[in-house]
Image 1 (cartoon, rainbow, N blue to C red):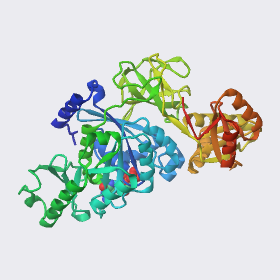
Image 2 (image 1 turned 180 degrees about the vertical axis):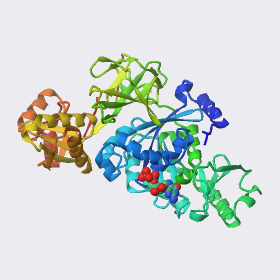
Image 3 (image 1 turned 45 degrees about the vertical axis):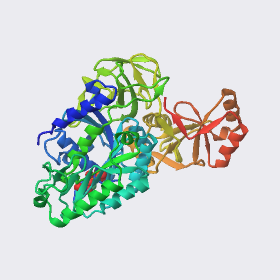
Length: 546
Ligand code: GDP
Protein backbone atom coordinates (compact mmCIF):
# COMPACT_ATOMS: atom_id res chain seq x y z
CA UNK A 1 0.00 0.00 0.00
CA UNK A 2 1.45 3.36 -0.93
CA UNK A 3 1.87 6.11 1.65
CA UNK A 4 -0.89 8.62 1.65
CA UNK A 5 0.23 12.14 1.09
CA UNK A 6 -2.77 14.41 1.07
CA UNK A 7 -3.20 17.93 -0.10
CA UNK A 8 -4.40 19.17 3.29
CA UNK A 9 -1.06 18.69 4.97
CA UNK A 10 0.96 21.30 3.23
CA UNK A 11 -1.86 23.78 3.64
CA UNK A 12 -2.03 22.86 7.32
CA UNK A 13 1.70 23.32 7.65
CA UNK A 14 1.66 26.69 6.01
CA UNK A 15 -1.29 27.61 8.15
CA UNK A 16 0.63 26.82 11.31
CA UNK A 17 3.64 28.65 10.05
CA UNK A 18 1.55 31.75 9.53
CA UNK A 19 0.41 32.04 13.13
CA UNK A 20 3.63 30.99 14.84
CA UNK A 21 7.15 32.24 14.27
CA UNK A 22 8.08 30.15 11.25
CA UNK A 23 10.44 27.27 11.80
CA UNK A 24 12.58 26.23 8.85
CA UNK A 25 10.42 23.75 6.85
CA UNK A 26 12.76 20.84 7.59
CA UNK A 27 12.18 21.36 11.30
CA UNK A 28 8.51 22.32 11.04
CA UNK A 29 7.72 19.03 9.34
CA UNK A 30 9.05 16.96 12.21
CA UNK A 31 6.84 15.30 14.78
CA UNK A 32 8.55 13.56 17.66
CA UNK A 33 6.28 11.60 19.95
CA UNK A 34 5.85 8.53 22.10
CA UNK A 35 2.99 6.11 22.62
CA UNK A 36 1.86 5.39 26.15
CA UNK A 37 -0.54 2.61 27.06
CA UNK A 38 -1.35 -0.22 29.40
CA UNK A 39 0.07 -3.54 28.18
CA UNK A 40 -2.24 -5.17 25.63
CA UNK A 41 -4.10 -2.02 24.66
CA UNK A 42 -2.59 -2.19 21.20
CA UNK A 43 0.61 -0.15 21.17
CA UNK A 44 2.53 -2.64 19.06
CA UNK A 45 -0.31 -3.02 16.59
CA UNK A 46 -0.70 0.72 16.28
CA UNK A 47 3.04 1.16 15.75
CA UNK A 48 2.89 -1.45 13.03
CA UNK A 49 0.10 0.44 11.27
CA UNK A 50 1.97 3.71 11.60
CA UNK A 51 4.85 2.15 9.76
CA UNK A 52 2.49 0.74 7.19
CA UNK A 53 0.97 4.14 6.46
CA UNK A 54 4.39 5.68 6.63
CA UNK A 55 5.36 3.38 3.77
CA UNK A 56 8.17 2.04 5.91
CA UNK A 57 6.95 -1.51 5.60
CA UNK A 58 5.02 -3.05 2.79
CA UNK A 59 2.80 -5.47 4.59
CA UNK A 60 1.15 -5.42 7.93
CA UNK A 61 2.35 -8.25 10.08
CA UNK A 62 5.88 -7.43 9.24
CA UNK A 63 6.55 -5.70 12.52
CA UNK A 64 5.21 -8.63 14.39
CA UNK A 65 7.06 -11.09 12.21
CA UNK A 66 9.91 -8.69 12.46
CA UNK A 67 9.22 -8.63 16.19
CA UNK A 68 11.14 -11.85 16.51
CA UNK A 69 14.04 -10.58 14.46
CA UNK A 70 13.93 -7.30 16.28
CA UNK A 71 13.99 -9.06 19.57
CA UNK A 72 17.19 -10.80 18.66
CA UNK A 73 18.56 -7.45 17.64
CA UNK A 74 17.59 -4.93 20.27
CA UNK A 75 15.61 -6.87 22.85
CA UNK A 76 18.60 -9.08 23.15
CA UNK A 77 18.04 -10.22 26.64
CA UNK A 78 16.88 -13.69 27.37
CA UNK A 79 14.61 -12.36 30.03
CA UNK A 80 12.88 -10.06 27.66
CA UNK A 81 12.26 -12.97 25.38
CA UNK A 82 10.97 -15.13 28.21
CA UNK A 83 8.67 -12.54 29.57
CA UNK A 84 7.92 -10.67 26.42
CA UNK A 85 8.74 -7.39 28.10
CA UNK A 86 10.46 -4.74 26.11
CA UNK A 87 12.85 -3.24 28.60
CA UNK A 88 14.59 -0.67 26.52
CA UNK A 89 13.24 2.28 24.65
CA UNK A 90 14.10 2.65 21.01
CA UNK A 91 13.34 5.22 18.36
CA UNK A 92 12.01 4.90 14.85
CA UNK A 93 11.73 7.42 12.05
CA UNK A 94 9.46 7.33 9.04
CA UNK A 95 7.80 9.70 6.62
CA UNK A 96 4.11 10.38 6.49
CA UNK A 97 3.27 12.51 3.49
CA UNK A 98 5.52 15.53 3.76
CA UNK A 99 6.04 14.92 7.47
CA UNK A 100 8.83 13.15 9.26
CA UNK A 101 7.60 11.22 12.28
CA UNK A 102 9.98 10.19 15.01
CA UNK A 103 8.36 7.63 17.24
CA UNK A 104 10.15 6.98 20.49
CA UNK A 105 9.18 3.74 22.13
CA UNK A 106 8.55 3.74 25.86
CA UNK A 107 9.14 0.70 27.99
CA UNK A 108 5.75 -0.78 28.77
CA UNK A 109 6.42 -2.13 32.21
CA UNK A 110 5.71 0.03 35.23
CA UNK A 111 8.99 -0.94 36.82
CA UNK A 112 10.82 1.17 34.31
CA UNK A 113 9.08 4.42 34.99
CA UNK A 114 12.25 6.43 35.41
CA UNK A 115 13.41 5.32 32.00
CA UNK A 116 10.01 6.28 30.70
CA UNK A 117 10.22 9.69 32.25
CA UNK A 118 13.51 10.37 30.58
CA UNK A 119 12.22 9.06 27.28
CA UNK A 120 9.38 11.52 27.53
CA UNK A 121 11.88 14.38 27.89
CA UNK A 122 12.85 13.64 24.30
CA UNK A 123 9.40 13.95 22.74
CA UNK A 124 7.04 16.82 21.99
CA UNK A 125 3.80 14.88 22.35
CA UNK A 126 2.39 11.53 23.40
CA UNK A 127 -0.31 9.29 22.05
CA UNK A 128 -2.30 7.60 24.76
CA UNK A 129 -3.79 4.32 23.58
CA UNK A 130 -6.66 2.88 25.59
CA UNK A 131 -8.68 -0.25 25.09
CA UNK A 132 -12.32 0.66 24.41
CA UNK A 133 -13.56 -2.11 26.68
CA UNK A 134 -11.20 -1.39 29.55
CA UNK A 135 -10.86 2.36 29.56
CA UNK A 136 -8.15 4.00 31.63
CA UNK A 137 -6.04 1.24 33.16
CA UNK A 138 -3.41 1.51 35.89
CA UNK A 139 -0.38 1.79 33.65
CA UNK A 140 -2.08 4.35 31.42
CA UNK A 141 -2.77 6.42 34.48
CA UNK A 142 0.83 6.23 35.70
CA UNK A 143 2.29 7.14 32.34
CA UNK A 144 -0.20 9.91 31.91
CA UNK A 145 0.93 11.41 35.21
CA UNK A 146 4.47 11.41 33.89
CA UNK A 147 3.33 13.26 30.76
CA UNK A 148 1.51 15.72 32.95
CA UNK A 149 4.72 16.54 34.83
CA UNK A 150 5.98 17.86 31.54
CA UNK A 151 2.66 19.29 30.29
CA UNK A 152 3.02 17.19 27.17
CA UNK A 153 0.26 17.49 24.59
CA UNK A 154 -1.65 14.21 24.41
CA UNK A 155 -3.60 12.65 21.57
CA UNK A 156 -5.85 9.79 22.59
CA UNK A 157 -6.63 6.71 20.54
CA UNK A 158 -9.47 4.52 21.78
CA UNK A 159 -8.67 1.15 20.30
CA UNK A 160 -10.48 -2.15 19.72
CA UNK A 161 -13.80 -0.60 18.77
CA UNK A 162 -14.44 -3.71 16.66
CA UNK A 163 -14.98 -5.50 19.98
CA UNK A 164 -17.70 -4.92 22.51
CA UNK A 165 -16.68 -1.58 23.95
CA UNK A 166 -18.04 0.74 26.53
CA UNK A 167 -20.43 3.53 25.79
CA UNK A 168 -18.58 6.40 24.13
CA UNK A 169 -19.65 8.99 26.69
CA UNK A 170 -18.60 6.64 29.48
CA UNK A 171 -15.12 6.34 28.06
CA UNK A 172 -14.77 10.07 27.64
CA UNK A 173 -16.10 10.71 31.16
CA UNK A 174 -13.68 8.24 32.60
CA UNK A 175 -10.72 9.94 30.94
CA UNK A 176 -11.90 13.37 32.06
CA UNK A 177 -12.45 12.23 35.63
CA UNK A 178 -9.53 9.89 36.20
CA UNK A 179 -6.96 11.94 34.40
CA UNK A 180 -8.36 15.41 35.00
CA UNK A 181 -7.99 16.45 31.40
CA UNK A 182 -10.64 17.79 29.03
CA UNK A 183 -11.53 15.53 26.14
CA UNK A 184 -12.76 16.59 22.75
CA UNK A 185 -13.97 14.00 20.24
CA UNK A 186 -12.07 14.16 16.97
CA UNK A 187 -14.18 11.30 15.69
CA UNK A 188 -17.33 9.55 16.85
CA UNK A 189 -17.82 5.80 16.55
CA UNK A 190 -20.79 4.40 14.66
CA UNK A 191 -21.95 1.21 16.37
CA UNK A 192 -19.69 -1.00 18.46
CA UNK A 193 -18.43 -4.55 18.35
CA UNK A 194 -19.97 -6.52 15.50
CA UNK A 195 -21.98 -3.46 14.52
CA UNK A 196 -19.00 -1.13 14.38
CA UNK A 197 -19.14 0.48 10.96
CA UNK A 198 -16.60 3.22 11.27
CA UNK A 199 -16.51 6.79 12.50
CA UNK A 200 -17.89 10.17 11.82
CA UNK A 201 -14.90 12.50 11.53
CA UNK A 202 -16.02 15.45 13.61
CA UNK A 203 -13.13 17.63 12.56
CA UNK A 204 -13.60 17.27 8.82
CA UNK A 205 -17.29 16.40 8.56
CA UNK A 206 -16.85 13.11 6.74
CA UNK A 207 -17.45 9.44 7.27
CA UNK A 208 -14.72 6.85 7.54
CA UNK A 209 -16.05 3.38 6.89
CA UNK A 210 -14.16 0.33 7.99
CA UNK A 211 -13.40 -2.46 5.56
CA UNK A 212 -13.78 -5.68 7.52
CA UNK A 213 -12.70 -7.82 4.62
CA UNK A 214 -9.21 -6.44 4.36
CA UNK A 215 -7.49 -5.49 7.59
CA UNK A 216 -4.77 -3.60 5.83
CA UNK A 217 -6.93 -1.45 3.64
CA UNK A 218 -7.37 2.21 4.34
CA UNK A 219 -10.93 3.02 5.25
CA UNK A 220 -13.21 4.43 2.61
CA UNK A 221 -13.79 8.12 3.15
CA UNK A 222 -17.13 9.63 2.26
CA UNK A 223 -17.45 13.38 2.21
CA UNK A 224 -20.83 14.34 3.60
CA UNK A 225 -22.72 17.53 4.04
CA UNK A 226 -23.45 17.36 7.75
CA UNK A 227 -25.29 14.62 9.57
CA UNK A 228 -28.53 15.42 7.72
CA UNK A 229 -26.99 14.52 4.38
CA UNK A 230 -29.43 12.08 2.67
CA UNK A 231 -26.43 10.04 1.51
CA UNK A 232 -26.18 8.76 5.06
CA UNK A 233 -29.38 6.74 4.69
CA UNK A 234 -27.65 4.49 2.20
CA UNK A 235 -24.53 4.07 4.27
CA UNK A 236 -25.74 3.58 7.83
CA UNK A 237 -28.67 1.46 9.07
CA UNK A 238 -31.47 3.66 10.49
CA UNK A 239 -31.05 2.75 14.18
CA UNK A 240 -27.33 3.45 14.12
CA UNK A 241 -27.81 6.66 12.19
CA UNK A 242 -30.36 7.93 14.67
CA UNK A 243 -28.04 7.09 17.55
CA UNK A 244 -25.11 8.79 15.82
CA UNK A 245 -27.09 11.98 15.25
CA UNK A 246 -28.25 12.08 18.85
CA UNK A 247 -24.85 11.38 20.29
CA UNK A 248 -22.98 13.84 18.12
CA UNK A 249 -25.46 16.55 18.97
CA UNK A 250 -25.03 15.80 22.66
CA UNK A 251 -21.26 15.64 22.32
CA UNK A 252 -21.19 19.03 20.64
CA UNK A 253 -23.26 20.44 23.47
CA UNK A 254 -21.47 18.81 26.38
CA UNK A 255 -17.86 18.50 25.31
CA UNK A 256 -15.38 21.27 24.54
CA UNK A 257 -14.37 21.96 20.93
CA UNK A 258 -10.80 21.40 19.82
CA UNK A 259 -8.83 24.34 21.13
CA UNK A 260 -5.32 24.17 19.73
CA UNK A 261 -3.73 26.07 22.59
CA UNK A 262 -5.39 23.94 25.26
CA UNK A 263 -4.11 20.89 23.41
CA UNK A 264 -0.57 22.27 23.23
CA UNK A 265 -0.68 23.10 26.93
CA UNK A 266 -1.70 19.55 27.74
CA UNK A 267 -5.08 20.41 29.25
CA UNK A 268 -7.23 19.05 26.43
CA UNK A 269 -6.87 15.82 24.52
CA UNK A 270 -8.56 15.03 21.21
CA UNK A 271 -9.78 11.45 21.04
CA UNK A 272 -10.02 9.24 17.95
CA UNK A 273 -11.86 5.94 17.93
CA UNK A 274 -10.67 3.04 15.87
CA UNK A 275 -9.34 -0.43 15.56
CA UNK A 276 -5.63 -0.67 15.07
CA UNK A 277 -5.77 -4.26 13.96
CA UNK A 278 -8.20 -3.33 11.20
CA UNK A 279 -6.06 -0.32 10.27
CA UNK A 280 -9.06 1.74 11.15
CA UNK A 281 -8.81 5.26 12.56
CA UNK A 282 -5.05 5.16 12.38
CA UNK A 283 -4.63 7.45 9.42
CA UNK A 284 -6.94 10.02 11.00
CA UNK A 285 -4.84 9.88 14.17
CA UNK A 286 -1.69 10.41 12.11
CA UNK A 287 -3.36 13.29 10.31
CA UNK A 288 -4.05 14.71 13.76
CA UNK A 289 -0.38 14.54 14.72
CA UNK A 290 0.57 16.08 11.42
CA UNK A 291 -1.97 18.88 11.61
CA UNK A 292 -1.91 19.72 15.29
CA UNK A 293 1.66 18.82 16.05
CA UNK A 294 3.38 20.08 17.91
CA UNK A 295 6.50 20.94 15.99
CA UNK A 296 9.86 20.55 17.74
CA UNK A 297 9.58 22.57 20.93
CA UNK A 298 12.09 24.72 22.81
CA UNK A 299 14.24 22.86 25.31
CA UNK A 300 14.86 23.97 28.89
CA UNK A 301 18.55 24.55 29.46
CA UNK A 302 21.00 26.59 31.53
CA UNK A 303 21.89 29.40 31.28
CA UNK A 304 19.23 29.82 28.57
CA UNK A 305 16.63 27.72 26.79
CA UNK A 306 17.34 26.31 23.33
CA UNK A 307 15.04 27.18 20.43
CA UNK A 308 14.57 24.56 17.75
CA UNK A 309 15.39 26.96 14.93
CA UNK A 310 18.77 28.05 16.25
CA UNK A 311 21.40 27.63 13.56
CA UNK A 312 23.86 25.79 15.76
CA UNK A 313 23.39 22.19 16.68
CA UNK A 314 22.57 21.28 20.26
CA UNK A 315 21.35 17.98 21.57
CA UNK A 316 21.10 15.96 24.74
CA UNK A 317 21.40 12.35 25.78
CA UNK A 318 18.16 10.95 27.19
CA UNK A 319 19.03 7.30 27.06
CA UNK A 320 22.08 5.10 26.95
CA UNK A 321 21.77 1.55 25.81
CA UNK A 322 24.44 -1.06 25.91
CA UNK A 323 24.88 -3.98 23.60
CA UNK A 324 22.28 -3.17 21.01
CA UNK A 325 24.46 -5.31 18.89
CA UNK A 326 25.60 -8.19 21.08
CA UNK A 327 28.68 -8.64 18.93
CA UNK A 328 30.02 -5.27 19.98
CA UNK A 329 30.54 -4.04 23.47
CA UNK A 330 29.75 -0.48 22.58
CA UNK A 331 26.95 1.64 23.87
CA UNK A 332 24.60 3.82 22.00
CA UNK A 333 23.65 7.19 23.42
CA UNK A 334 20.26 8.30 22.16
CA UNK A 335 20.43 12.00 21.47
CA UNK A 336 17.49 14.27 20.85
CA UNK A 337 18.55 17.15 18.67
CA UNK A 338 17.21 20.30 20.27
CA UNK A 339 18.32 22.67 17.53
CA UNK A 340 20.08 23.07 14.23
CA UNK A 341 21.02 20.92 11.29
CA UNK A 342 23.37 18.10 12.10
CA UNK A 343 25.58 16.48 9.48
CA UNK A 344 27.70 13.41 9.79
CA UNK A 345 31.29 14.01 10.78
CA UNK A 346 30.45 17.13 12.75
CA UNK A 347 32.61 18.03 15.70
CA UNK A 348 30.57 18.69 18.80
CA UNK A 349 31.58 19.78 22.27
CA UNK A 350 30.70 17.43 25.08
CA UNK A 351 29.80 20.14 27.56
CA UNK A 352 30.36 18.14 30.76
CA UNK A 353 33.95 17.24 29.89
CA UNK A 354 34.55 20.20 27.55
CA UNK A 355 36.05 17.73 25.08
CA UNK A 356 35.40 17.72 21.37
CA UNK A 357 33.84 14.63 19.85
CA UNK A 358 33.72 13.89 16.16
CA UNK A 359 30.40 12.29 15.45
CA UNK A 360 31.44 10.10 12.58
CA UNK A 361 29.06 7.18 12.79
CA UNK A 362 25.73 8.45 14.07
CA UNK A 363 22.81 6.12 13.64
CA UNK A 364 19.35 7.09 12.52
CA UNK A 365 16.71 4.60 13.48
CA UNK A 366 14.82 4.31 10.25
CA UNK A 367 11.85 2.05 10.67
CA UNK A 368 13.23 -0.89 8.79
CA UNK A 369 16.72 -0.87 10.20
CA UNK A 370 19.45 1.14 11.79
CA UNK A 371 21.18 3.33 9.25
CA UNK A 372 24.04 5.75 9.31
CA UNK A 373 22.68 9.25 9.61
CA UNK A 374 24.07 11.60 7.01
CA UNK A 375 22.05 14.45 8.44
CA UNK A 376 19.43 15.17 11.05
CA UNK A 377 17.43 18.15 12.20
CA UNK A 378 16.07 19.54 15.43
CA UNK A 379 13.46 17.09 16.64
CA UNK A 380 15.26 14.01 15.37
CA UNK A 381 16.71 11.25 17.50
CA UNK A 382 20.11 9.94 16.58
CA UNK A 383 22.15 7.22 18.17
CA UNK A 384 25.81 7.88 18.89
CA UNK A 385 27.93 4.79 19.49
CA UNK A 386 30.53 5.45 22.16
CA UNK A 387 32.57 3.76 24.83
CA UNK A 388 30.98 5.33 27.86
CA UNK A 389 31.83 9.02 27.43
CA UNK A 390 28.20 9.93 26.85
CA UNK A 391 25.92 9.78 29.84
CA UNK A 392 22.27 10.49 30.39
CA UNK A 393 21.70 14.21 30.71
CA UNK A 394 24.83 15.19 28.77
CA UNK A 395 24.57 18.06 26.32
CA UNK A 396 26.40 18.33 22.99
CA UNK A 397 26.82 21.74 21.39
CA UNK A 398 28.96 23.51 18.80
CA UNK A 399 31.04 24.98 21.60
CA UNK A 400 28.61 26.99 23.69
CA UNK A 401 28.35 26.11 27.35
CA UNK A 402 24.70 25.26 27.50
CA UNK A 403 23.36 22.39 29.53
CA UNK A 404 19.97 20.88 29.03
CA UNK A 405 18.01 20.63 32.28
CA UNK A 406 14.99 18.66 33.42
CA UNK A 407 16.41 15.18 33.08
CA UNK A 408 16.26 14.02 36.64
CA UNK A 409 17.38 10.94 38.36
CA UNK A 410 14.85 9.69 40.91
CA UNK A 411 15.68 8.23 44.29
CA UNK A 412 15.25 4.48 44.16
CA UNK A 413 12.38 2.97 46.09
CA UNK A 414 14.01 -0.40 46.67
CA UNK A 415 17.53 -1.00 47.90
CA UNK A 416 19.51 -4.20 48.07
CA UNK A 417 23.08 -5.15 48.73
CA UNK A 418 24.86 -6.90 45.91
CA UNK A 419 27.79 -9.31 45.97
CA UNK A 420 29.65 -11.25 43.32
CA UNK A 421 29.00 -14.98 43.58
CA UNK A 422 32.78 -15.36 43.37
CA UNK A 423 34.49 -12.96 45.83
CA UNK A 424 37.55 -12.82 43.56
CA UNK A 425 35.44 -11.04 40.98
CA UNK A 426 34.54 -7.99 43.07
CA UNK A 427 36.38 -5.63 40.68
CA UNK A 428 34.47 -6.98 37.71
CA UNK A 429 31.26 -6.47 39.57
CA UNK A 430 32.15 -2.85 40.24
CA UNK A 431 32.75 -2.28 36.55
CA UNK A 432 29.45 -3.88 35.61
CA UNK A 433 27.54 -1.88 38.20
CA UNK A 434 29.11 1.38 37.06
CA UNK A 435 28.05 0.66 33.53
CA UNK A 436 24.46 0.10 34.58
CA UNK A 437 24.50 3.19 36.73
CA UNK A 438 25.66 5.27 33.77
CA UNK A 439 23.00 3.74 31.58
CA UNK A 440 20.47 4.75 34.18
CA UNK A 441 19.41 1.14 34.65
CA UNK A 442 19.97 1.29 38.40
CA UNK A 443 21.42 3.46 41.12
CA UNK A 444 24.65 2.18 42.55
CA UNK A 445 25.88 3.38 45.92
CA UNK A 446 29.24 2.70 47.47
CA UNK A 447 28.96 2.85 51.27
CA UNK A 448 31.45 5.13 53.00
CA UNK A 449 32.44 2.27 55.29
CA UNK A 450 32.75 -1.39 54.51
CA UNK A 451 32.93 -3.09 51.16
CA UNK A 452 30.31 -4.06 48.62
CA UNK A 453 27.66 -2.02 46.91
CA UNK A 454 24.07 -1.11 47.40
CA UNK A 455 21.89 -1.12 44.33
CA UNK A 456 18.71 0.91 44.13
CA UNK A 457 15.86 0.50 41.69
CA UNK A 458 12.32 1.70 41.27
CA UNK A 459 10.65 -1.67 40.69
CA UNK A 460 11.56 -5.14 41.89
CA UNK A 461 11.76 -6.55 38.38
CA UNK A 462 14.81 -4.40 37.75
CA UNK A 463 16.85 -6.49 40.21
CA UNK A 464 16.17 -9.53 38.06
CA UNK A 465 17.01 -7.64 34.89
CA UNK A 466 20.28 -6.52 36.44
CA UNK A 467 21.23 -9.95 37.71
CA UNK A 468 20.53 -11.48 34.37
CA UNK A 469 22.43 -8.79 32.46
CA UNK A 470 25.46 -8.96 34.74
CA UNK A 471 25.55 -12.69 34.25
CA UNK A 472 25.00 -12.48 30.50
CA UNK A 473 27.24 -9.56 29.68
CA UNK A 474 29.98 -10.03 32.26
CA UNK A 475 29.75 -13.75 32.94
CA UNK A 476 29.34 -12.92 36.59
CA UNK A 477 26.78 -14.60 38.82
CA UNK A 478 25.62 -12.16 41.50
CA UNK A 479 23.58 -12.30 44.65
CA UNK A 480 21.29 -9.63 45.94
CA UNK A 481 20.51 -9.52 49.61
CA UNK A 482 18.37 -7.40 51.88
CA UNK A 483 19.71 -4.00 52.79
CA UNK A 484 19.08 -2.33 56.12
CA UNK A 485 18.10 0.82 54.22
CA UNK A 486 14.91 1.65 52.38
CA UNK A 487 15.40 5.27 51.27
CA UNK A 488 18.12 7.23 49.55
CA UNK A 489 18.44 11.01 49.47
CA UNK A 490 21.04 13.10 47.68
CA UNK A 491 22.81 15.51 49.99
CA UNK A 492 23.38 19.07 48.89
CA UNK A 493 24.38 22.26 50.67
CA UNK A 494 27.49 24.14 51.76
CA UNK A 495 30.58 21.92 51.67
CA UNK A 496 31.49 22.43 55.34
CA UNK A 497 28.04 21.29 56.43
CA UNK A 498 28.18 18.29 54.09
CA UNK A 499 31.56 17.33 55.58
CA UNK A 500 30.14 17.65 59.07
CA UNK A 501 27.10 15.59 58.24
CA UNK A 502 29.17 12.89 56.56
CA UNK A 503 31.48 12.67 59.58
CA UNK A 504 28.67 12.42 62.09
CA UNK A 505 26.61 9.89 60.06
CA UNK A 506 29.19 7.74 58.32
CA UNK A 507 27.14 4.58 58.63
CA UNK A 508 24.36 6.27 56.62
CA UNK A 509 26.56 7.70 53.88
CA UNK A 510 27.22 6.27 50.45
CA UNK A 511 28.48 7.75 47.21
CA UNK A 512 26.72 7.44 43.88
CA UNK A 513 28.54 6.70 40.62
CA UNK A 514 29.36 10.39 40.19
CA UNK A 515 30.90 10.43 43.67
CA UNK A 516 28.08 12.56 45.10
CA UNK A 517 27.10 11.86 48.70
CA UNK A 518 23.84 10.08 49.41
CA UNK A 519 22.13 9.65 52.75
CA UNK A 520 20.65 6.18 53.24
CA UNK A 521 18.14 5.36 55.91
CA UNK A 522 15.06 3.36 56.74
CA UNK A 523 13.35 6.08 58.73
CA UNK A 524 11.72 9.28 57.60
CA UNK A 525 12.54 10.44 61.10
CA UNK A 526 16.27 10.40 60.21
CA UNK A 527 15.65 12.59 57.20
CA UNK A 528 13.67 15.07 59.28
CA UNK A 529 16.38 15.04 61.93
CA UNK A 530 19.12 15.90 59.45
CA UNK A 531 17.11 18.71 57.95
CA UNK A 532 16.46 20.06 61.43
CA UNK A 533 20.06 19.77 62.61
CA UNK A 534 21.73 21.14 59.49
CA UNK A 535 20.06 24.34 58.42
CA UNK A 536 21.81 24.57 55.03
CA UNK A 537 21.50 20.93 54.02
CA UNK A 538 18.92 19.62 51.60
CA UNK A 539 18.13 15.92 51.28
CA UNK A 540 16.56 15.40 47.97
CA UNK A 541 14.77 12.55 46.21
CA UNK A 542 15.79 13.70 42.74
CA UNK A 543 19.04 14.71 41.17
CA UNK A 544 19.52 16.53 37.89
CA UNK A 545 21.70 14.45 35.63
CA UNK A 546 24.24 16.86 34.33
P1 GDP B 1 0.52 -3.85 23.34
O1 GDP B 1 0.79 -4.77 24.46
O2 GDP B 1 -0.11 -2.58 23.81
O3 GDP B 1 1.69 -3.61 22.43
O4 GDP B 1 -0.66 -4.53 22.49
P2 GDP B 1 -0.60 -5.34 21.11
O5 GDP B 1 -0.51 -4.42 19.97
O6 GDP B 1 0.39 -6.42 21.22
O7 GDP B 1 -2.09 -5.91 21.13
C1 GDP B 1 -2.57 -6.75 22.14
C2 GDP B 1 -3.59 -7.70 21.58
O8 GDP B 1 -4.74 -6.97 21.14
C3 GDP B 1 -3.08 -8.46 20.37
O9 GDP B 1 -3.59 -9.76 20.43
C4 GDP B 1 -3.67 -7.70 19.20
O10 GDP B 1 -3.88 -8.50 18.08
C5 GDP B 1 -4.98 -7.23 19.77
N1 GDP B 1 -5.47 -6.00 19.13
C6 GDP B 1 -4.78 -4.89 18.84
N2 GDP B 1 -5.58 -3.99 18.25
C7 GDP B 1 -6.80 -4.54 18.16
C8 GDP B 1 -8.05 -4.09 17.64
O11 GDP B 1 -8.20 -3.00 17.11
N3 GDP B 1 -9.09 -4.96 17.75
C9 GDP B 1 -8.96 -6.17 18.32
N4 GDP B 1 -10.04 -6.94 18.37
N5 GDP B 1 -7.82 -6.64 18.81
C10 GDP B 1 -6.73 -5.83 18.73
